[in-house]
Length: 204
Image 1 (cartoon, one colour):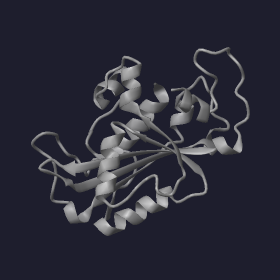
Image 2 (cartoon, helix red, strand yellow; image 1 turned 180 degrees about the horizontal axis):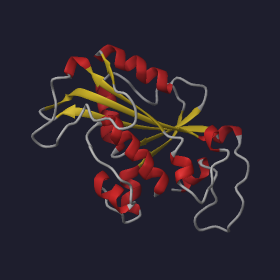
Image 3 (tube, helix red, strand yellow; image 1 turned 45 degrees about the horizontal axis):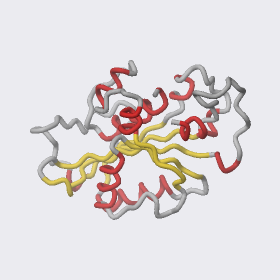
Image 4 (cartoon, helix red, strand yellow; image 1 turned 180 degrees about the vertical axis):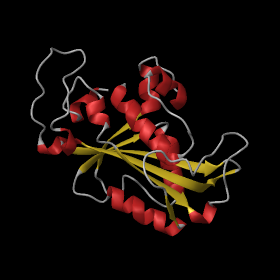
């Protein structure tokens, strides 16, 4: 969690209560949370991609004592893979690709999805990659022939599932959000889950 507080320009939890120091150029990062949904009968078939971003440049006036002043700057996107649109999960989890709460979903072809991911990661800015069970989402990204670290702009990775375990909080995303008093519904929509993951990160 100190990595998170460092990049958000917050004082250490266990240290003296000091005023945050001005953010240095190498600390000027974008947090990017990813969530990918795959078909329950063949996980190689990626059906949705969700992206949520929090740009630290937007936080200059944020109140460190008010997490909502950070959360209002989170932006989310939701992509539905048209090639796999018919593969909606129903047996083991309830998929809800048409229930994105934080904007308008975009339908894209499979080969176009990589272009959208490239656009999210190709930047001169440094990035902190965020996920809930991040290794699973990275595997799905690799199945799309995309590597989030290829551009070498990712300077840190934060897994909210691991952080929750370290803080003795529930590791399941839904239970974690409940413990953090975040209202959430329609999980297993990649856009929603990316946003929920970012919200959990900020509030933990």
